[in-house]
Length: 262
Ligand code: ARG
Image (cartoon, rainbow, N blue to C red):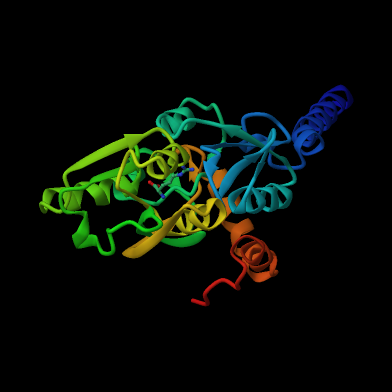
């Protein structure tokens, strides 16, 4: 009788110790991330102001927001630069825990992965070189338009093309390479996310956005379908960051104005 009680107590202690380990190692969230103590983020870091490289360091709105989320989760953020083409397969094969890459929540992508609650609104736009004769969407007729491959910019360009609104679509691996082609006169226009084309045009100075194409897109953080625990934690972190003012601070830092009120 006495012996049995002793064994039971010992098993109990072992269980308590085993349960405590994850908390010591990763402050509570290690069970839901690939590497204990870390939140690994896959991102195509050529999409300012959301994500870009400053030397070897990833910076941007997404990076700041993800850093704040990781902090709430008690883990360290690690950004893994990933080609846009293949970013979803990379998540599905556990190369990282989340995708944060100004990714629009779309019905097709939702079949593959889960998304957090939307963290920012976006639209499409047409960018051209300064002095271009293209002034409206109708002026794209017969023109060559550049897009980043497999983006909502490409999908919008295809719609316009089907309606007979443009001659050719050229697909680029990154948005920055598309902008270089535009600046060099190799293409006539770019269809791409409005805030990015605005930012790139302003900072590089050679192009301008002639029109916004209203698409009412929303960006979300991509998480694997089976990792519902992480998704829950990210969503609560997001809503805390919105109510404690952190979101507004980050928004102002990258966009220079307060976020629109819902
Ligand atoms: N929002 C667009 C989409 O989801 C473009 C995103 C591109 N992101 C990037 N980091 N290159 O299709």
